Image (cartoon, rainbow, N blue to C red):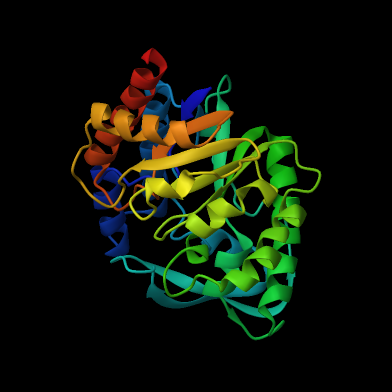
Length: 318
């Protein structure tokens, strides 16, 4: 089976950006801002639905960054200083761990009232290694311990989302492959084992999604990671890395460049994907953006979603 979905946050519409600026200047009420968020969320959901996306998300328009719902709603943690998000011109507030982490689920608070009832729903969450790496921990003071605790938090969150009706959980882990935050090879086995806690007793489909770096070492261990799918940024990972690897189930190919406004050619993408398919046996294949699409304008993101879907159609015709 070949499918597609968007990997995380979608860009805000120009209308929402304008309304947000007016609100920041005290020239728009909170009620009017909520209306603007509602209209923008409806629009991003509609685009996904009309394009035939397999798993639909709410676009994460209210997420200021990947960690904010967790740093704002978990007990024992709060949003900290504004820091650069890897090598991008975007920023996040580093979670500050001050006490024992406690969950009051659902933390992610997806906007389910805007999601179509007859479609499969998807949500994106931070993976344990990236959360621990990008946090300031003054309580546990042990990265492995923080990862284990956060893995248990994620497990509870995923089970809550499962009960609500979500079918796909993407776990974003850019720090796992980014050049200055990636762990030593000797540490990978312990880090990957933590996913057993994250997905224990979980029935929904799960994905470990890596981006901003070379996933070669992760691919070599893919068969031992307790998730259904492995997501890879093809703009940082050489297709040669797929030779001889073993997967549990599926592969999510980040072949749409979410950090560049140039629109890809579906025929060129098909050629690359076909070559990868020759190297690795895949039960389920997803054609996706390499990272969150909120680096783009809304119009460009919409164009790339259409290219993504066209690529899937071309592959099915092969």
